[in-house]
Image 1 (cartoon, one colour):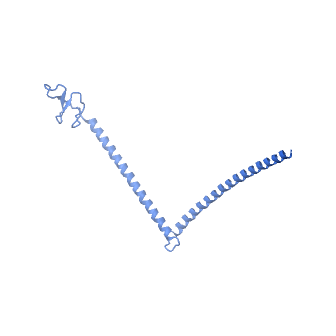
Image 2: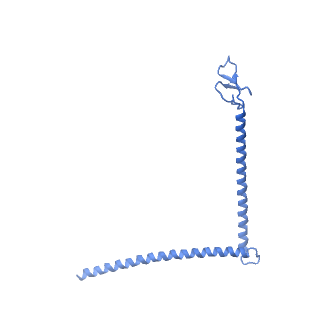
Image 3: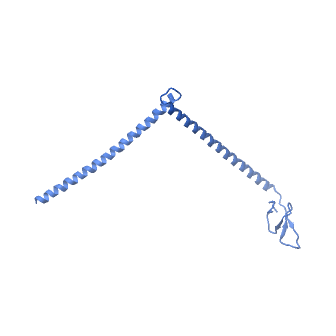
Length: 154
């Protein structure tokens, strides 16, 4: 019986140790996550400090950070140029859209105002299905609605 009691104690100890190790592992992971959160807070604070220092010292040519300040100003200028290009592109697109809309409206108005043109049979002796456009003289099929050359409505 001593053998089985000893084996039972070993299994119990092993299970308890394994449980403790799993708990330690979980606790370590929680601590690592907490460390990452604190490091992120530090990074955000560094960024805020940098912004404040730039606002306060950015134009100081004797500053210890004058090279970094120059890089920041150059990047800000590029951003401003890019935004100006975006605005110019947007304006061109809007102007093009307005011009296309106006042209479409004018074409629609002209279409609505156009008087229907009646086509008369052309050379009925040689082709009984043919018509001639009254504007350009193009020979057309009898059932044509528009001239295929000048676009005139028949």
